[in-house]
Image (cartoon, rainbow, N blue to C red):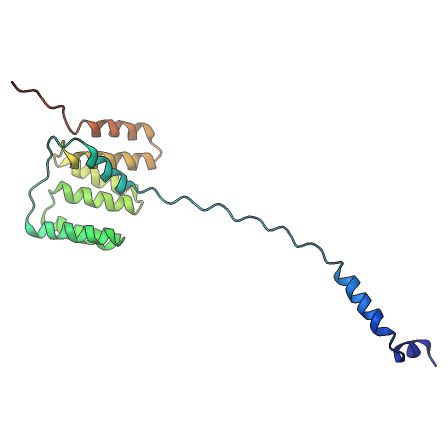
Length: 181
């Protein structure tokens, strides 16, 4: 009889196979090191919140807001609600409709500039803020918001000198109070 057949019939092959399997399983290579995930990007800066907070801090010695009719006020409030819900495109559409009624309203242009900031469209934000500024608002809280919006757009466009200049101009939105005798 063949020695291999004799070896298999006696069942000696089972422990040998088991020993071979255990030996081979110990020969596994270590798993490749897992690269750590990249750090998460910082959240975008809330320019609109910062601008409104800064404008609210300014001494309210006076200010200018254009008179608005009821329709324009409704559009402005509707746009604010949509912005709070982060529906920026819808809010922009509402403001475009309001501007079709009253194109000379700097508050509407500023609101549109702030929506552009929230959408991180800095070119449009600066353009809308310049339009608002060109309509004659040169003092008060709205003036501060307009200039800080321009400064934010400049800062995001890597123009820190222009941003600082506009921040200085924002401080000039409230001239010193004159003492009257």
